[in-house]
Amino acid sequence: MTVPRLEIELKKIGHNVKELRNLFGYKGISVTAVTKAVLGSPEIANILVEGGINSIGDSRIANISKMRKAGIEAQFILIRIPMVNETENVVRYADISLNSEISVMKQLSKYAVEQGKNHKVVLMVEMGDLREGIMPSDLEKTVEETICLESISLVGIGTNLACYGGIKPTEEKMQRLSSIANDIQNRYGIKLEIVSGGNSANYEWFMTTDDIGLINNLRIGEAILLGCETLHRREIHNLYTDAFTLIGEVIELKIKPSLPYGEVCQDAFGNVPKFENKGYIKRAIVGLGRQDVDTTGIKPRMEVEVLGSSSDHLILNIKDSDLKVGDEIGFDVNYSALVRAMTSPYVKKMYL
Ligand SMILES: *Cc1c(COP(=O)(O)O)cnc(C)c1O
Image 1 (cartoon, rainbow, N blue to C red):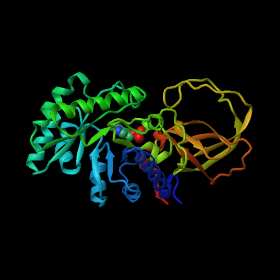
Image 2: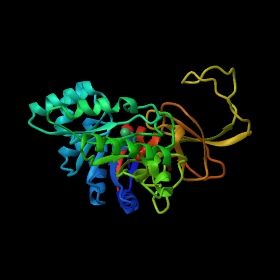
Image 3: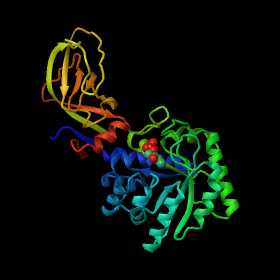
Image 4: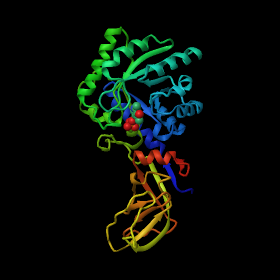
């Protein structure tokens, strides 16, 4: 079989999405399943829809258009605030987009009129993580401008935390978002269908809060795909954390010293590497490198140690294992490794 390859167990993803939908649904929160880490894979989107998802979020309009063309039936949300440059396609392919710039929404409005469509927008509110979002003090003005735009409907507000600044979605921040939603509804006499409190990092808040306020939606990617929350990367009870397995093949296996010998200069990536002396060890090279995966984000499924990597080689200390040249090794992937493996043209994706 082709190596390297990423084996994707669709049943496990299906199980995770059903569990999470039930869990969040129990307190009245809907799940928008986020497919950006899997490049909008139609096979995975299909499993999400079978698991009861009717709202799919992706950061790339290309992924959304791919899923639509594959016949996936769901409401599609563009979750990266759009580029002016892509607004025509945003209106064409996405039902909803997250936004923070009025100049961009004016373009969305122009194309919505042109295409005879109504495009829905969710305004993102900055709450401390310092990625996308309107400063709360500027929100009123933006709301007023947005509701005046032709063929644009303001359907909600949202926030995103724990992505850039690592800021935790606390009870206090969620209450604040709720109260902002409440103020907008009262002041403008509109109903916000969507109050989207965040992403997989909101799990802990959700589990501990006894009042979700007006929050009625979360945009969940990693928890569905990898079975963990994202503040501490703790496993979520009852979910599979091994739906994805990266597989590589051993291409060299020799007993060699643990310390490189000669004059130490820079490695392939401009770093001066440091090593620990463990005497002679059993070393394996796997035909897998940084062009395939974020090698710092993979964990062997057997008792071997990753020593390092270059673009095309992964170096292991295989300890007492009886691996041979030509054997395959499976690895767990973290989010970063998953994204890189999905993106790499060298890694074959195999759906099981
Ligand atoms: C990536 C992203 C998500 C999903 O995050 P996960 O940690 O994968 O759950 C949600 N919202 C926005 C705006 C994102 O960019």
